[in-house]
Amino acid sequence: MAPFLNLLRDVVGILNESRKLYLKNKKLMFSVLVIPLFLNGLVYLFNVFAIKPEITNLIQESSLIPMMDPSTPEYLAHLMRVFEDFRHFVVSSYIFATVSSIINLLSVLVIVHASALTHIDENVQIKDFPALTLKSWKGPLVTYFYIVLFTLGYWFLFFIVLFPLLLLSTNFGSLAAKSGALFVMFAVFESYLAIVWYLSLVISILENTYGIQALGKAAKIVKGMKPRLFLLNLFFGLLSFGLVQIVRRVDLRRSFAVTLTTGLVLVSLIFAVRMFQLVTYTVAYFQCKRLQGNDVESLRDVEYTKLTSTALIGSLP
Image (cartoon, one colour):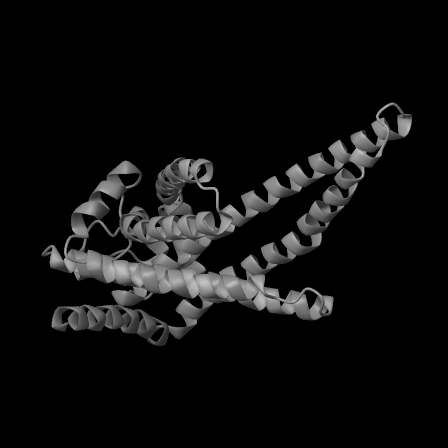
């Protein structure tokens, strides 16, 4: 019992140290949180006003096809209209996914940079962040690509394991229980794997290491911190899951303005939770370095610790 209480105390300590970063440099930390929140809100509104109506229209148009006579000209015209609606939906979805991915990447970059700079008491202002972002976006992008591949492969394995259950189960209640238990097991283990994934993302931003090398370095330096970070992942995962369930239970029969406002607030809260999780991983990165015997205040591989804002901007091509 005592070791577990000590572990909980360490986790609370990481959360508290991360919280203090917002009080340490209020203007910088809240700026890099509010701006991505605003952009994420715009993406949510784009989804509500552009994509969801297209999905509704596509479903309604498609539902009429079985009731039409295939030999009539009206059937062909309606089918072509469905294909055109589907094409518009695909284009809108690609735009949504691209813009959302760009905003997420930029959000990760600025929140990790701001957290690291605040942690080491480096005096950098919000106006210097375009330079930092331009200098360091390629590494996190490559690392994030590998993380996405590993995540897709992991959940593909889930469906491979789930498929025999679908074939062998005859009782729907039993199938639902087994599928739910299997999903929870995979989700919990993913929280354990995500320790290295999140830490590698921080490493790819703060150091000149990315991709497989960043994942390998994260696995190396995280030794001794895994139990704490695993509990942190479970905490943030449960918190996000709870907020998602609230979003799903928003009463769509209420006025559109109330539904839109409620959804926007909850989506922003989920995004803020994810951003704070990255702050905790930035703090954990420095703790991992300290456990490895490195003086985090004078790390040479954190490229901006000794550079002034002018030098950063001047070093851009």
